Length: 317
Image (cartoon, rainbow, N blue to C red; front, side, top):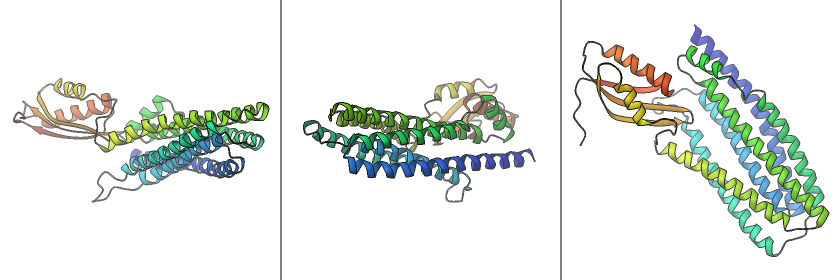
């Protein structure tokens, strides 16, 4: 009964977050279109590069909404883990597009350094100020639902039988919050370029600030690519040490060996473990298995564990 009630609360919480994300997505999408139109009219590369940054956030918000919808979709016989990996694949695709945009901005900025064109600064400033307002509204919406107490996450985690929907939802919203915050920095940089050009007619400010924004996007994108590839390659999560997991299982009374230990990430925040565990006491395999699962859940926050209990295991070559 508690599980059913908790599932209803989880779905209600996801729906509430999805509604706020849809509002932010509409605002950022509209602003992205305005940025592109004004960037073409004013020939401002700084505004265009910030539009590329905004495109990343529009795609990121769409990805989060897409992931939330697929989180509700049940696993099938052909997709036994569900559809969580779609989030990782979409993030990787989005990163590759961002790299192409950033490379183009760097190329165009290199040309404009030697031949800086005349730029209509006032429309650039106006659009960037609108961007600050849009991002501020987005931060307010996300901030009202993106912060949760650790104790609340732990309580919901225990009551729902191992589901991490509250904690993971918080992390997803927090990541979107950081995306919008970085947009505010980009808008502030564009305003700075516009003010410099408007007051001093120093047109080099536009390509110089564009280079800074492009490098900022590349750094963030490279980090996302590394994480996405690491997950797709079934890499060990950064916050889990295989040695610590092995030693924790070996410390359980009656356990004499741990073999074929594998640790990987299904999607961000959802880790899994499989292992062969050798025990000496054949009379209590069930209680030992319960102890192992309890340690993996409480100490390492892993709820997807497949443990095979054995009384003998040959040494690996």
